[in-house]
Length: 99
Image (cartoon, rainbow, N blue to C red; front, side):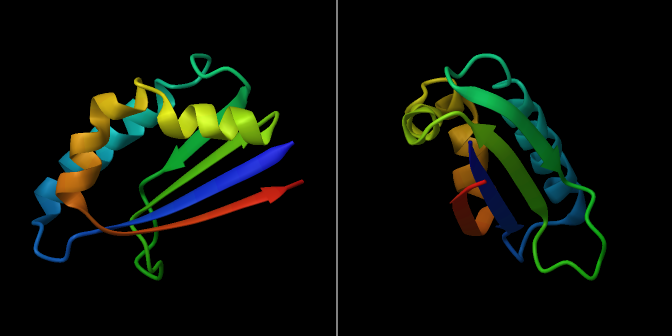
């Protein structure tokens, strides 16, 4: 099993209301991928992080294989909310590992 973690930081110039709206859209978009990507076992999104966090959102997903992770990255379903990512994120950090 492969675990994928993505950490997102919103652009600093966004108002809090813009961050909240973007986080709701992204959470919904990611969670709607559940059951629609071949080889994806699970996906969880956290967007109500404590002020002690250095990021604004965390996506944690598990996949059966590396190919399934690639399917996730290239899925047309993920591109449905890609514009929200591009417009609102300053930085993205990812980590993939076999567990």
